Amino acid sequence: MDTTRLYGHRYQYKYIGGIAMFKDIRFTAMISVVIGFMAVLLSGCASTAVGGGAGSAEKALKITIPGEPLTIDPTKSIETNGGAVIDQVSEGIYRRDANNKIAAGVVDEVVKPTDNGTKYTFNINKDAKWQDGSAIKSEDFVNSIDRQADPRTKSQQTTSIQYIENFAAVNSGKADPSKLGIHAVNDRTFTIKLTKPVPFMNYEFTSFYPIQTSAIKKYGSQYGSSSDKTVANGAYVITGWNGTNDSWKYEKNKNYWDAKNVKIPEVDVTVVKDNNTAQNMFNGGQIDLTSLTGQYVKENKNNKNLVVTETGRNNYIYFNDKKKATSNENLRKAISMVIDQDQLAEDVLQDGSIGANNIVPKDYAKDPKTGEDFTSEMGDQAPTDTTKAKEYWAKAQKEIGKDKISLDFLVDDTDTEKKLAEYVQGAVSNNLKGLTINIESVPHATHVTRDFSTDFDICTVGWGPDYPDAQNFLDGMRSNNTINFSKFKDQQYDDLMNKVDDTTKYDANQRWDFEKQADKRLMSIAAVAPTYQASQAHLISSKVGGLKWDAMSGQSGKLQYAFWK
Image 1 (cartoon, rainbow, N blue to C red):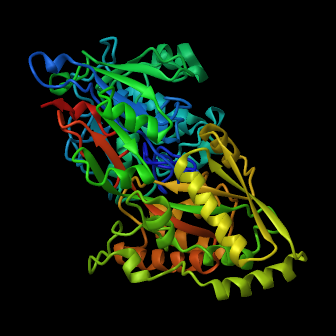
Image 2 (tube, one colour; image 1 turned 90 degrees about the vertical axis):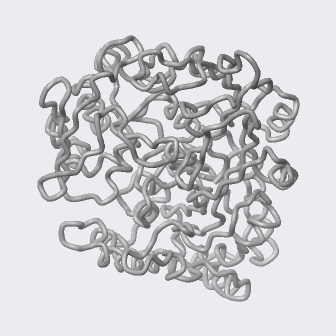
């Protein structure tokens, strides 16, 4: 699945061939578990096919999204479809500007921390308002983040806030949420105290969202379950979504502090799960922008309307560590080694993705001394070797005590996920006699639910990054991480990641070395099986400008920057 972070980023997030996770977890951002962050992440935006000419600025932008959001509560959402909506209707402490750079969001400016890099003091923009025109106050941030940390909320989107002072005690139920290190100084000023310096915290602050305090009191756990139970503070207001329907609208938020720079006043959104349907709608002028995957990217390679962007979203396979067969290291190695990641990407997926040989993606994390790419320094950590795979499989059969083993492979019911699963099924069948892979293709929401309950033998997962550090991906396999759906636990790995995490004791160069050691440990025991590093492809009308994607963008893009040419 693909999660966005998980599933996709971060609102991709991020972003999982299964889950398309939104932003939880610095793994950020978006779940291919999936969950995901592996399959399709957020879908793109589109405009009516008849742009240009007099009055074109008033025309609705027509876009698609590949699935229904589970929730648009920003303190709970951890999958890409929800993240796609949240990107349009909510704004955090910071935001990413039209060029995808960190910029002030609800607050006045990007600030520097004090107290040895652990304390941030924010002043809310005096023009920042909710969609009803009421002022955004410090209590809206404090109550939102306190609620997110409160175990009674059961939020799985907590990685970004885990650095806040007293988070562990609050989230475990040992301390009251009021003890969390976020406090209101007055209506427009609030502070956040961290337990240690966090070098990538500015990226995390983009997903620190306020929620209107009165709305939390009114709707409780139902907040974000429909458009009438959601109060926007972003560029758009969502209307017409009842929580299950497959079309709705974004209408320009007239009370958004930067409303004057939002050029398109209305966006019509339609859920379109099928690539062929999306392509035909685009060609027929029914939509202006949509995302494509698989063969449809290849078919449109000469289409001037096609835009392909390399992403930092990596996809891999999780093994259920609670089951005897899939907890076996030799079985994991055998499956990983029959996967030819380059063949998978180039000949099967055919969507611009590249083969992945590490849990960390290529061209993403850089050596603080030399600037060299993390994966370049690490080399191929998931080699293809069918001869060795057969040897490992023979060892696994003896250790497990069975000559024949059948595993269920949980994937999303999307084109990309199905192709990936069929490829793995075939590679295993051709090389590992006695091992059978049964594909379970289910709706994305079902995949996400089963991921969190570890209801699978093996499953697809994808992660879209939240910040440019290898830790964002390595963290996901720590035993205490909420997106470690496999329940994998290795003390040596945890100990190394604890050192990576200790920014008070270790500098950037030392952290880099620990990250490399942790990565080598993780991959040497095949804790995950990398599959591919995703690209995202969009068909976008030549009459639409202002939309840019980068390695950490969600598939939808930030529609507030779109304009009619």
